[in-house]
Length: 168
Image (cartoon, rainbow, N blue to C red; front, top):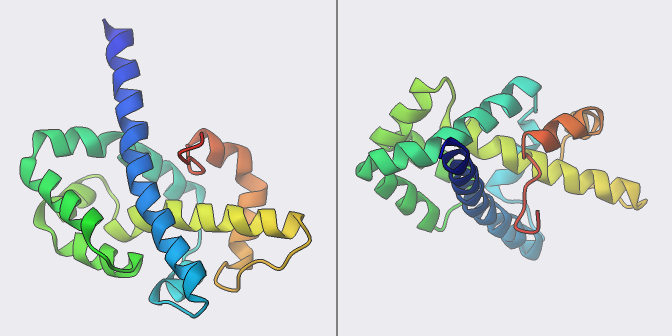
């Protein structure tokens, strides 16, 4: 029974994270199509990844679905945020103004900005690493320090599901 519950929780957590990351990927696709700087570009560039941030994201990602199930108001805030057509930097601000989401992040020792930008920057940087490996120029909005960080911590970040996608 415990094994089945753990498996269900793991699948649920992965599903919730994939939904979140797919909205992040959609925003990135919009960015690529726009070919012009977006409000997220500076935030992505200036956000520096650390293992502490990556570990905290992984920890909080496991808790957020259970918290939303237990708190219908928080679930509604999450749904509203996911459906909002806005840049990620704006979504982080909206999440910080959502009472239940903001309280959840505070009680778990993080911020909406870190929860949104840790996987976004990790995925963006992984794409930049792939571009470099293919002898292409990485996007200017990806910080070279993050490229170095992802190269150095790729295995650890993978174990924390920071590179999860719908194909994984």
